[in-house]
Image (cartoon, rainbow, N blue to C red; front, side):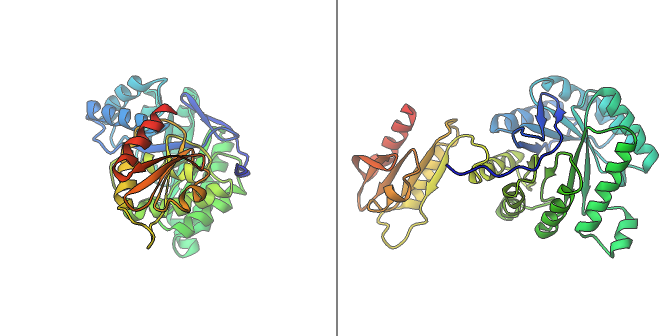
Length: 355
């Protein structure tokens, strides 16, 4: 068994019915991309996110008129999954969302209108007993910091976040979550490493505007995965230009790959080589598809060589290793049954059902 990563210690912050920070599980987040005013569609998407394993959902509230719809969404999920109000530019929206029952408010103080307006948001959050995420990112940094550093860099992101943290503390407010996101992976990693040394609050990780799944998952896995492997991070979102359910799936794959948390099946499959005598790529894809909804914390291996396969995948709970026209089913690295090629997939699924 792999030793767990040594986790950075942070304050525990409660968000609705869950808590992050300290020794609490690293929480998976996503954000709806429906029109928030379409309450039915937004609720349906949140249900799908929840079913996929999302633990905190952020919802955009772009106008004061949208707050009424936001309240209906919050009321529907109260006590089931935390709903976070994502607010930019208008501090009054943040205040209204806090009063409407939001489980957390996310603002970028740099674009919300100055210290006095942020003060109002803090007062409302305090009155309603909810946390605030100070969400700094490279796309909306304060101009004085851009001028000071000659553009956006990790130091500018960190200085912005720390500036606002100190202001919140001066207001006697400590239910804080921090993010310092960038679209550039090295900059994002550097910023989080630095701020992790400067504050004790939970950190929300993310590569902002990561892109489509093809590139966005890779960027996020490198950026978020690097930090998680260093013990930095208490919650995160894989930001993709895609169905947000894909963000949740990718997030859990990152956690599983690092063996931090498990949910569902971990698939082990060899990359194929000249010894492969069957269409292993197609077989592995069929196995992955068939196991997508299986909620068992098991490791399943699909190997293309019945000589080395069981040994290479001995850590798997169950698997198949195929040769020319046939293969074997193995459990914990030990062969238990020889099968024809066309019998491999159904036999594997049948045995998994028994586990």
